Length: 361
Image 1 (cartoon, rainbow, N blue to C red):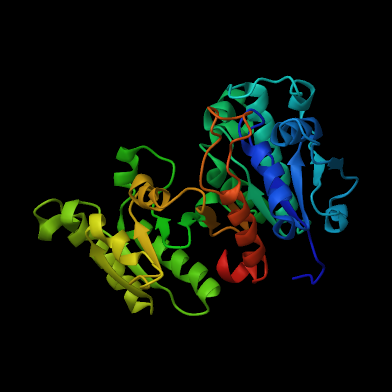
Image 2 (image 1 turned 180 degrees about the vertical axis):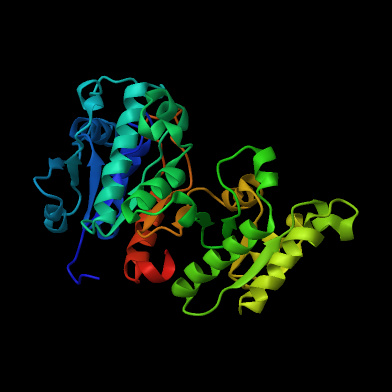
């Protein structure tokens, strides 16, 4: 890896959502964390967000970059922007309504992600942090990005193309983390019916291996992994379902044979509480493997979305994001909380200090 210091790219997110506002607040409130970062987006949208955040006082300056390396020397409390070359930029401006789904907004959000991902894959930026996009707007926009339900799948496809490998050979997983709990998911953005079908031996074992490899680099030791069951009471010995006996337990046994510190399956209604770290008592597990999206994300988000960070495991680049959506209902009001985005930036900086091939690939 090159020793040259590289900036971190923050994608603008949907311009009709809270992404631009929380970005401005992050540069305002966390100047040390955002030092060396820049925004991939539209300068007019960021200037509008700066005016919203200022609420009648002097807006924070938004500067246009000639090259991304200029972000490394920008003064604190200004927002450096790399102007995205998107056809939607001609349709989106400071009068674009907040909180409304549009094809133009979806296209711009997708174009920002594609630019930042390709820059990261080429080694031009150190990491990428993605502000929220709206999945409906992304689909409404049509085009290449519309085929993906969200950031994770889009980034997987871009990385596979860059590496010239079939997408099946680049498995990725979503990890949600905060100060108290880490959760990794077997499946991501699919229907519940499809998620149940995805609970098979290969997927569970693969998720365990990705989790082990990624957390080993973060912790400097083998992580202790607790596995949630799929059914109530983890199947109660087969009374409430056989997936624990037929699929999950054999995958755990296979992982243990490869040296992983993993146990379970445990009842899903208690395993997250057992893993929760408190000031008075560390959790029993470093991370919990959840069988599907909502099983794992509900406990993390219940503890507070303002601290949650989404990390994509398995990519040949560092990508983090805040643990919330576009919040169209409060977009344009200046009330959006930037805490989760600041946590995501700090996490990206931390992960960038490690060898990406060790913890993400």
